[in-house]
Length: 376
Ligand SMILES: *Cc1c(COP(=O)(O)O)cnc(C)c1O
Image (cartoon, rainbow, N blue to C red; front, top):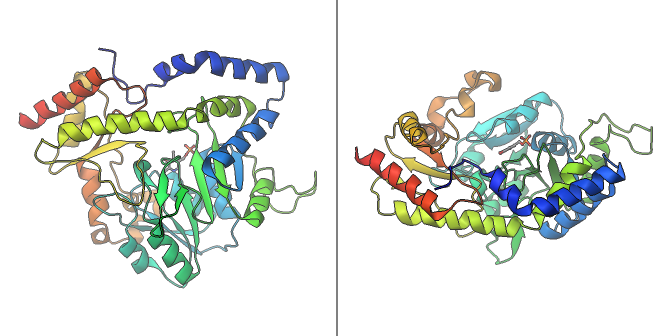
Protein backbone atom coordinates (compact mmCIF):
# COMPACT_ATOMS: atom_id res chain seq x y z
CA UNK A 1 0.00 0.00 0.00
CA UNK A 2 1.20 3.47 -0.85
CA UNK A 3 1.91 5.87 2.03
CA UNK A 4 -1.34 7.65 2.96
CA UNK A 5 -1.35 11.46 2.76
CA UNK A 6 -3.94 13.93 4.05
CA UNK A 7 -3.66 15.55 0.60
CA UNK A 8 -1.55 13.78 -2.04
CA UNK A 9 -0.33 16.56 -4.32
CA UNK A 10 2.77 14.63 -5.27
CA UNK A 11 0.93 11.78 -7.01
CA UNK A 12 -1.52 14.21 -8.58
CA UNK A 13 1.37 16.24 -10.02
CA UNK A 14 3.05 13.16 -11.49
CA UNK A 15 -0.05 12.51 -13.59
CA UNK A 16 -0.14 16.00 -15.13
CA UNK A 17 3.57 16.71 -14.96
CA UNK A 18 4.32 17.06 -18.66
CA UNK A 19 1.39 19.40 -19.26
CA UNK A 20 2.16 21.54 -16.22
CA UNK A 21 5.88 21.70 -16.94
CA UNK A 22 5.22 22.74 -20.51
CA UNK A 23 2.97 25.61 -19.37
CA UNK A 24 5.50 26.69 -16.76
CA UNK A 25 8.27 26.66 -19.38
CA UNK A 26 6.14 28.88 -21.64
CA UNK A 27 5.80 31.46 -18.88
CA UNK A 28 9.52 31.35 -18.15
CA UNK A 29 10.34 31.83 -21.84
CA UNK A 30 7.83 34.65 -22.20
CA UNK A 31 9.19 36.67 -19.23
CA UNK A 32 5.64 37.94 -18.56
CA UNK A 33 5.86 36.89 -14.93
CA UNK A 34 3.15 39.16 -13.57
CA UNK A 35 -0.15 39.72 -15.36
CA UNK A 36 1.01 37.76 -18.40
CA UNK A 37 -1.47 36.63 -21.05
CA UNK A 38 -1.94 33.32 -19.24
CA UNK A 39 -3.55 35.12 -16.28
CA UNK A 40 -6.20 36.51 -18.64
CA UNK A 41 -6.59 33.10 -20.26
CA UNK A 42 -7.15 31.38 -16.91
CA UNK A 43 -9.56 34.14 -15.90
CA UNK A 44 -11.63 33.61 -19.05
CA UNK A 45 -11.62 29.82 -18.64
CA UNK A 46 -12.77 30.15 -15.05
CA UNK A 47 -15.51 32.64 -16.03
CA UNK A 48 -16.77 30.04 -18.49
CA UNK A 49 -16.52 27.17 -16.03
CA UNK A 50 -18.44 29.07 -13.36
CA UNK A 51 -20.77 30.79 -15.81
CA UNK A 52 -20.07 34.14 -14.15
CA UNK A 53 -19.49 37.50 -15.82
CA UNK A 54 -16.33 38.56 -13.98
CA UNK A 55 -13.45 36.67 -12.39
CA UNK A 56 -10.83 38.88 -10.77
CA UNK A 57 -7.69 36.92 -9.94
CA UNK A 58 -5.77 37.96 -6.83
CA UNK A 59 -2.99 36.83 -4.52
CA UNK A 60 -4.84 34.54 -2.09
CA UNK A 61 -8.24 33.69 -0.67
CA UNK A 62 -7.86 36.01 2.32
CA UNK A 63 -7.18 38.99 0.05
CA UNK A 64 -10.15 37.92 -2.08
CA UNK A 65 -12.42 38.35 0.95
CA UNK A 66 -10.87 41.66 1.89
CA UNK A 67 -11.14 43.07 -1.63
CA UNK A 68 -14.75 41.88 -1.92
CA UNK A 69 -15.65 43.70 1.28
CA UNK A 70 -13.77 46.82 0.10
CA UNK A 71 -15.95 46.90 -3.02
CA UNK A 72 -19.06 47.49 -0.92
CA UNK A 73 -20.14 50.78 0.47
CA UNK A 74 -19.48 50.13 4.18
CA UNK A 75 -18.41 52.31 7.04
CA UNK A 76 -16.56 51.49 10.28
CA UNK A 77 -18.75 49.64 12.76
CA UNK A 78 -21.03 48.11 10.12
CA UNK A 79 -21.78 44.50 10.97
CA UNK A 80 -20.98 41.41 8.96
CA UNK A 81 -22.60 38.15 9.96
CA UNK A 82 -20.58 34.99 9.38
CA UNK A 83 -20.06 31.47 10.60
CA UNK A 84 -18.44 30.57 13.91
CA UNK A 85 -17.19 27.30 12.42
CA UNK A 86 -14.68 28.30 9.76
CA UNK A 87 -11.10 29.24 9.05
CA UNK A 88 -10.16 32.54 10.72
CA UNK A 89 -9.47 34.34 7.42
CA UNK A 90 -13.12 35.22 7.08
CA UNK A 91 -13.33 37.24 10.32
CA UNK A 92 -9.76 38.47 10.16
CA UNK A 93 -10.36 40.70 7.15
CA UNK A 94 -13.60 42.03 8.63
CA UNK A 95 -11.72 43.21 11.69
CA UNK A 96 -8.83 44.60 9.66
CA UNK A 97 -11.29 46.81 7.79
CA UNK A 98 -12.65 48.10 11.13
CA UNK A 99 -15.98 46.43 10.57
CA UNK A 100 -17.75 44.39 13.19
CA UNK A 101 -17.73 40.61 12.77
CA UNK A 102 -20.83 38.96 14.20
CA UNK A 103 -20.27 35.23 14.56
CA UNK A 104 -23.27 32.91 14.56
CA UNK A 105 -23.83 29.23 15.16
CA UNK A 106 -24.00 26.56 12.44
CA UNK A 107 -26.34 23.66 11.74
CA UNK A 108 -25.32 20.51 13.52
CA UNK A 109 -25.83 18.28 10.49
CA UNK A 110 -24.40 20.37 7.62
CA UNK A 111 -21.86 22.44 9.61
CA UNK A 112 -23.03 25.41 7.50
CA UNK A 113 -24.25 28.75 8.87
CA UNK A 114 -27.59 28.43 10.66
CA UNK A 115 -30.46 30.31 9.05
CA UNK A 116 -32.23 30.80 12.37
CA UNK A 117 -29.06 32.21 13.93
CA UNK A 118 -28.60 34.67 11.05
CA UNK A 119 -32.14 35.95 11.54
CA UNK A 120 -31.56 36.46 15.26
CA UNK A 121 -28.27 38.32 14.70
CA UNK A 122 -29.58 40.98 12.32
CA UNK A 123 -29.50 44.54 13.71
CA UNK A 124 -29.91 47.94 12.02
CA UNK A 125 -26.11 47.93 11.57
CA UNK A 126 -25.98 44.62 9.68
CA UNK A 127 -24.80 45.13 6.11
CA UNK A 128 -23.37 41.82 4.89
CA UNK A 129 -23.78 38.08 5.34
CA UNK A 130 -20.79 35.89 4.51
CA UNK A 131 -21.82 32.27 4.22
CA UNK A 132 -18.85 29.89 4.06
CA UNK A 133 -19.63 26.80 2.00
CA UNK A 134 -17.87 24.66 4.53
CA UNK A 135 -15.99 21.46 3.58
CA UNK A 136 -17.40 21.63 0.03
CA UNK A 137 -21.17 21.77 0.34
CA UNK A 138 -23.17 24.98 -0.13
CA UNK A 139 -25.01 26.75 2.64
CA UNK A 140 -28.76 27.21 2.10
CA UNK A 141 -28.61 30.04 -0.45
CA UNK A 142 -32.36 30.14 -1.13
CA UNK A 143 -32.84 31.18 2.49
CA UNK A 144 -29.77 33.39 2.74
CA UNK A 145 -30.59 35.35 -0.42
CA UNK A 146 -34.18 35.79 0.76
CA UNK A 147 -33.03 37.15 4.15
CA UNK A 148 -30.58 39.45 2.36
CA UNK A 149 -33.24 40.79 0.05
CA UNK A 150 -35.70 41.34 2.86
CA UNK A 151 -33.17 43.21 5.00
CA UNK A 152 -31.26 44.94 2.22
CA UNK A 153 -27.97 43.13 2.91
CA UNK A 154 -25.07 42.14 0.69
CA UNK A 155 -24.02 38.51 0.37
CA UNK A 156 -20.40 37.46 -0.11
CA UNK A 157 -19.90 33.71 -0.54
CA UNK A 158 -16.64 32.32 0.80
CA UNK A 159 -16.13 29.54 -1.73
CA UNK A 160 -12.55 28.64 -0.74
CA UNK A 161 -13.62 25.07 0.06
CA UNK A 162 -16.39 24.57 -2.49
CA UNK A 163 -15.26 25.61 -5.95
CA UNK A 164 -17.18 23.61 -8.54
CA UNK A 165 -20.11 22.73 -6.27
CA UNK A 166 -23.52 23.07 -7.95
CA UNK A 167 -26.40 24.72 -6.15
CA UNK A 168 -29.97 23.87 -7.08
CA UNK A 169 -32.53 26.58 -6.30
CA UNK A 170 -36.11 25.81 -5.32
CA UNK A 171 -37.23 26.83 -8.81
CA UNK A 172 -35.01 24.10 -10.26
CA UNK A 173 -32.34 26.41 -11.74
CA UNK A 174 -28.71 25.68 -10.88
CA UNK A 175 -25.68 27.87 -10.32
CA UNK A 176 -22.07 27.30 -9.31
CA UNK A 177 -20.99 28.03 -5.75
CA UNK A 178 -19.65 31.57 -5.49
CA UNK A 179 -21.81 33.05 -8.25
CA UNK A 180 -25.09 33.43 -6.38
CA UNK A 181 -24.44 36.27 -3.97
CA UNK A 182 -23.28 39.77 -4.85
CA UNK A 183 -19.67 38.57 -4.77
CA UNK A 184 -17.93 35.20 -4.35
CA UNK A 185 -14.37 34.53 -3.28
CA UNK A 186 -12.05 31.56 -3.49
CA UNK A 187 -8.54 30.40 -2.66
CA UNK A 188 -6.06 28.49 -4.83
CA UNK A 189 -3.91 27.44 -1.85
CA UNK A 190 -2.26 24.15 -2.92
CA UNK A 191 -4.48 21.90 -0.80
CA UNK A 192 -7.75 23.46 -1.96
CA UNK A 193 -9.85 21.61 -4.55
CA UNK A 194 -8.42 23.82 -7.29
CA UNK A 195 -4.95 24.52 -5.94
CA UNK A 196 -1.84 26.05 -7.47
CA UNK A 197 1.74 25.43 -6.43
CA UNK A 198 1.84 28.53 -4.29
CA UNK A 199 -0.68 31.12 -3.13
CA UNK A 200 -3.52 32.37 -5.27
CA UNK A 201 -7.13 33.47 -5.11
CA UNK A 202 -9.99 34.93 -7.09
CA UNK A 203 -13.16 36.97 -6.75
CA UNK A 204 -16.33 36.39 -8.77
CA UNK A 205 -19.23 38.68 -9.54
CA UNK A 206 -21.95 39.28 -12.11
CA UNK A 207 -22.08 42.97 -11.12
CA UNK A 208 -20.13 45.28 -13.47
CA UNK A 209 -19.79 48.05 -10.91
CA UNK A 210 -18.27 45.83 -8.20
CA UNK A 211 -16.02 44.23 -10.79
CA UNK A 212 -14.64 47.59 -11.88
CA UNK A 213 -13.98 48.64 -8.27
CA UNK A 214 -12.28 45.34 -7.42
CA UNK A 215 -10.08 45.39 -10.54
CA UNK A 216 -8.90 48.78 -9.37
CA UNK A 217 -8.50 47.74 -5.71
CA UNK A 218 -6.25 44.75 -6.56
CA UNK A 219 -3.97 47.16 -8.41
CA UNK A 220 -3.34 49.87 -5.78
CA UNK A 221 -6.70 51.48 -6.41
CA UNK A 222 -5.58 52.74 -9.79
CA UNK A 223 -8.07 53.77 -12.43
CA UNK A 224 -6.11 55.27 -15.29
CA UNK A 225 -2.41 54.52 -14.97
CA UNK A 226 -0.96 56.51 -12.05
CA UNK A 227 -4.36 58.01 -11.19
CA UNK A 228 -5.46 56.64 -7.85
CA UNK A 229 -9.22 56.68 -7.39
CA UNK A 230 -9.29 54.89 -4.06
CA UNK A 231 -6.97 53.22 -1.57
CA UNK A 232 -6.17 49.77 -2.90
CA UNK A 233 -3.82 46.88 -2.25
CA UNK A 234 -1.28 44.94 -4.25
CA UNK A 235 -2.87 41.56 -4.85
CA UNK A 236 -2.01 39.66 -8.01
CA UNK A 237 -2.11 36.11 -9.21
CA UNK A 238 1.29 35.53 -10.78
CA UNK A 239 1.61 34.09 -14.26
CA UNK A 240 3.23 30.83 -13.10
CA UNK A 241 0.30 30.06 -10.79
CA UNK A 242 -2.18 31.00 -13.51
CA UNK A 243 -0.45 28.62 -15.93
CA UNK A 244 -0.62 25.76 -13.41
CA UNK A 245 -4.23 26.56 -12.51
CA UNK A 246 -5.22 26.68 -16.19
CA UNK A 247 -4.07 23.09 -16.56
CA UNK A 248 -5.71 21.97 -13.33
CA UNK A 249 -9.02 23.69 -14.10
CA UNK A 250 -9.27 21.28 -17.03
CA UNK A 251 -9.26 18.42 -14.51
CA UNK A 252 -11.46 20.00 -11.84
CA UNK A 253 -14.55 17.96 -12.64
CA UNK A 254 -12.49 14.75 -12.64
CA UNK A 255 -10.93 15.77 -9.34
CA UNK A 256 -14.35 16.41 -7.83
CA UNK A 257 -15.55 13.02 -9.04
CA UNK A 258 -12.49 11.33 -7.47
CA UNK A 259 -13.20 13.04 -4.14
CA UNK A 260 -16.85 12.04 -4.32
CA UNK A 261 -15.86 8.45 -5.02
CA UNK A 262 -13.61 8.33 -1.97
CA UNK A 263 -16.43 9.91 0.08
CA UNK A 264 -18.84 7.18 -1.05
CA UNK A 265 -16.39 4.55 0.07
CA UNK A 266 -16.18 6.14 3.52
CA UNK A 267 -19.98 6.56 3.63
CA UNK A 268 -20.61 2.91 2.82
CA UNK A 269 -18.14 1.63 5.34
CA UNK A 270 -19.24 3.85 8.22
CA UNK A 271 -22.96 3.35 7.61
CA UNK A 272 -22.66 0.08 9.51
CA UNK A 273 -20.59 1.45 12.41
CA UNK A 274 -22.84 2.63 15.24
CA UNK A 275 -22.21 6.12 16.58
CA UNK A 276 -20.38 7.37 13.51
CA UNK A 277 -22.15 10.22 11.72
CA UNK A 278 -21.05 10.68 8.11
CA UNK A 279 -21.36 14.03 6.31
CA UNK A 280 -24.98 14.99 5.66
CA UNK A 281 -25.99 15.69 2.06
CA UNK A 282 -28.58 18.32 1.28
CA UNK A 283 -30.80 18.21 -1.78
CA UNK A 284 -29.94 21.78 -2.81
CA UNK A 285 -26.18 21.33 -3.27
CA UNK A 286 -23.65 18.86 -4.55
CA UNK A 287 -20.75 18.13 -2.21
CA UNK A 288 -17.22 18.51 -3.59
CA UNK A 289 -15.53 17.21 -0.44
CA UNK A 290 -12.75 19.60 0.37
CA UNK A 291 -12.87 17.69 3.65
CA UNK A 292 -14.50 14.44 4.66
CA UNK A 293 -15.46 14.98 8.28
CA UNK A 294 -16.98 12.50 10.70
CA UNK A 295 -18.84 13.32 13.88
CA UNK A 296 -18.48 10.73 16.60
CA UNK A 297 -20.36 11.56 19.78
CA UNK A 298 -18.12 11.53 22.84
CA UNK A 299 -15.05 10.99 20.71
CA UNK A 300 -11.60 11.54 22.16
CA UNK A 301 -10.48 13.23 18.95
CA UNK A 302 -6.84 13.63 19.79
CA UNK A 303 -6.56 10.03 20.93
CA UNK A 304 -8.05 8.79 17.66
CA UNK A 305 -5.76 11.14 15.75
CA UNK A 306 -2.75 9.79 17.59
CA UNK A 307 -3.90 6.19 17.10
CA UNK A 308 -4.24 6.78 13.36
CA UNK A 309 -0.94 8.63 13.11
CA UNK A 310 0.82 5.68 14.68
CA UNK A 311 -0.52 3.55 11.85
CA UNK A 312 0.72 6.05 9.28
CA UNK A 313 -2.70 7.62 8.73
CA UNK A 314 -2.90 11.40 8.90
CA UNK A 315 -6.12 12.93 10.27
CA UNK A 316 -6.99 16.49 11.24
CA UNK A 317 -9.35 18.28 13.59
CA UNK A 318 -11.10 21.00 11.54
CA UNK A 319 -11.77 23.02 13.65
CA UNK A 320 -10.59 22.37 17.20
CA UNK A 321 -11.76 25.73 18.57
CA UNK A 322 -14.74 27.87 17.62
CA UNK A 323 -13.97 31.42 16.57
CA UNK A 324 -16.26 32.99 19.19
CA UNK A 325 -13.86 32.05 21.98
CA UNK A 326 -10.77 33.45 20.27
CA UNK A 327 -9.07 36.39 21.92
CA UNK A 328 -8.49 38.16 18.60
CA UNK A 329 -12.16 38.11 17.72
CA UNK A 330 -13.82 39.70 20.75
CA UNK A 331 -14.58 36.55 22.71
CA UNK A 332 -15.92 38.71 25.54
CA UNK A 333 -18.89 39.93 23.50
CA UNK A 334 -20.32 36.45 22.91
CA UNK A 335 -22.46 34.22 25.07
CA UNK A 336 -21.08 30.69 24.83
CA UNK A 337 -24.60 29.29 25.18
CA UNK A 338 -25.50 30.76 21.78
CA UNK A 339 -23.17 28.32 20.04
CA UNK A 340 -24.26 24.81 21.02
CA UNK A 341 -23.52 23.37 17.57
CA UNK A 342 -20.06 24.80 16.95
CA UNK A 343 -19.12 23.90 20.50
CA UNK A 344 -20.34 20.35 19.93
CA UNK A 345 -18.71 19.96 16.51
CA UNK A 346 -15.34 21.29 17.62
CA UNK A 347 -15.26 18.58 20.26
CA UNK A 348 -16.50 15.66 18.19
CA UNK A 349 -15.26 16.02 14.60
CA UNK A 350 -12.37 14.40 12.82
CA UNK A 351 -11.41 14.90 9.16
CA UNK A 352 -10.03 11.93 7.26
CA UNK A 353 -7.57 11.89 4.36
CA UNK A 354 -9.40 13.34 1.35
CA UNK A 355 -7.87 13.99 -2.05
CA UNK A 356 -7.97 12.95 -5.68
CA UNK A 357 -5.52 10.06 -5.46
CA UNK A 358 -6.91 7.84 -2.70
CA UNK A 359 -6.80 4.15 -3.55
CA UNK A 360 -9.16 1.50 -2.35
CA UNK A 361 -6.63 -0.36 -0.21
CA UNK A 362 -5.78 2.91 1.51
CA UNK A 363 -9.44 3.75 2.13
CA UNK A 364 -10.08 0.25 3.46
CA UNK A 365 -7.11 0.52 5.83
CA UNK A 366 -8.21 3.94 7.11
CA UNK A 367 -11.75 2.66 7.74
CA UNK A 368 -10.67 -0.58 9.42
CA UNK A 369 -8.28 1.32 11.66
CA UNK A 370 -11.03 3.66 12.86
CA UNK A 371 -13.32 0.69 13.44
CA UNK A 372 -10.61 -1.00 15.53
CA UNK A 373 -10.16 2.16 17.60
CA UNK A 374 -13.90 2.51 18.24
CA UNK A 375 -14.26 -1.13 19.27
CA UNK A 376 -11.39 -1.03 21.73
C1 LIG B 1 -8.37 28.56 2.84
C2 LIG B 1 -9.49 29.41 3.24
C3 LIG B 1 -9.42 30.81 3.17
C4 LIG B 1 -8.16 31.57 2.91
O1 LIG B 1 -7.49 31.30 1.74
P1 LIG B 1 -5.93 31.62 1.61
O2 LIG B 1 -5.67 31.47 0.13
O3 LIG B 1 -5.19 30.66 2.44
O4 LIG B 1 -5.73 33.03 2.03
C5 LIG B 1 -10.55 31.54 3.48
N1 LIG B 1 -11.69 30.94 3.85
C6 LIG B 1 -11.79 29.61 3.95
C7 LIG B 1 -13.08 29.01 4.36
C8 LIG B 1 -10.71 28.79 3.66
O5 LIG B 1 -10.81 27.48 3.77
